[in-house]
Length: 142
Image (tube, rainbow, N blue to C red; front, side, top):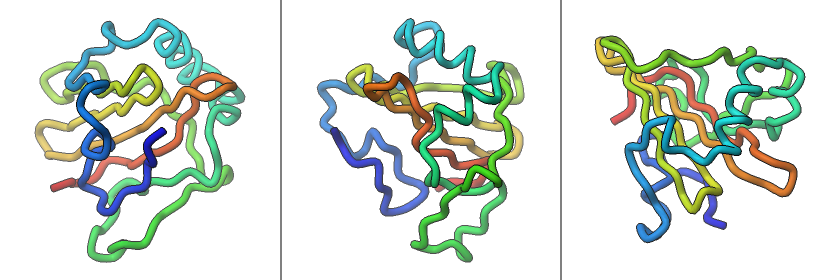
């Protein structure tokens, strides 16, 4: 499996894998059925959500200052985690897209069109089911 380590917060996981198994700009309906079942439960059950996150969870907090963070990695601990409700659906304010790699790794990007902010989450399918493996809150990405 390809490493999820990032050199910068602006690069996408799909930049790091071969293109043969990558599907870009997918809508929710096109995702694997087992992921959609997981996704619904993940956003409705807080205990399930916590059990499906590998802590410490790599990512970025909301409104992170890229100059302050630089090349340092940021990790969320369980006590810092805030329950993730269902994210905004596609509308005039938000655009949501997914990239799927071999039906084993899914990157979700939610963009606030007006403020040009993005939220990025990565989910990986493991022996124990789907897990959240990366979370970058609403930030400006280049």
